[in-house]
Length: 138
Image (cartoon, helix red, strand yellow):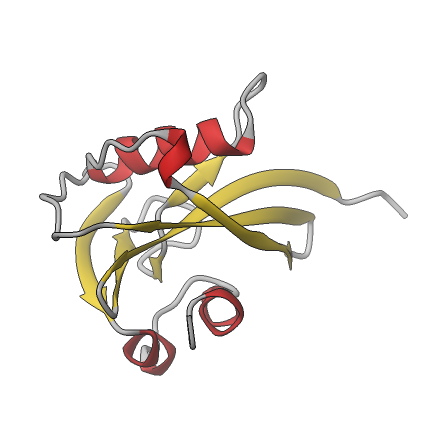
């Protein structure tokens, strides 16, 4: 029996009023052709806060200071060969920002309510749990 690899990946629920920003992954990415929240791996030497600010900018073009994010909690996401430790952050925006996608990672985005996300058939693993745990009734 081998120990599972543990990977630290941050994610962000970006809110504009009742809507949440969702990104659609390319066919070439991990969890291909599925919807998820912005986020990514924490790099060596980075804090979770630094990682989410960097990832949000890289994936969407949204520039935010670390102090603007609120940490909501953390979830373990189990895959057959690894466990992803997933700190979840929240960022409120007063107006919908222009989104600049990186075509190698994402090909579309939508602003959806939590209920619309939960009804969507093409979600990345545990996005429903993240939305139920951290986004509904907030």
